[in-house]
Length: 262
Image 1 (cartoon, helix red, strand yellow):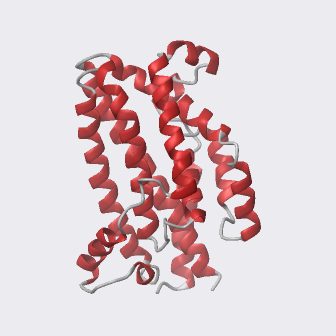
Image 2: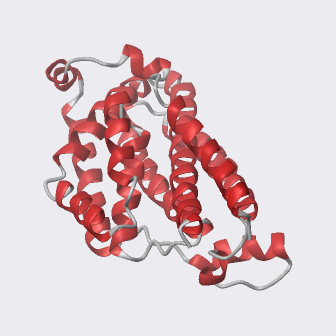
């Protein structure tokens, strides 16, 4: 197990990453359109697909939906690294460096998969875009569940599913939104703070607005047949990279803080 000094250094690295989230990605800078204008530009079918995807996300928080993964696949990755059989509970006791290694491998694998998925669904432009949105959402939730297990947390619990949704929201928020979410999650392990986060998510309005604003307009570039291959590959890969990095950093921070207080 790491020493207090090592944990403090790791925490400083995560906090440095948090401070880097102060600037917007280029596509976000040119995409800060007024919501009314965005609504006019976005085809009806695309808004409907976004609505369906968000409905699935609500179901995920309540029941776990179809996105809950098998922890055994992640345990096997740790077995290759540690040369011993591990349970999900035992993963929580491993060095953070080992957790980072497995999480990093997952981030690379999943983002490459997302690239090919985006390229494939970008072939037909408007005709295949309807398939891409729910697939991308499902992969995002899957990746965040894998990040949870990689740092020793159980994504089958409702509390962790809520944390995962906040991670997903963080990855697609602007500067103001990211700052607010970091403050909300700063003491997520405290029951009182966690209850506040749960209460804020009851209406789902913030999640709907954030994801519609960020994801919906980007997918407009994918409506052009053939050219959608390049846009789809790039946007999907970037989306999953950001989602995975967010999960890694925020779960890593929780694990560090828990070890510093024990």
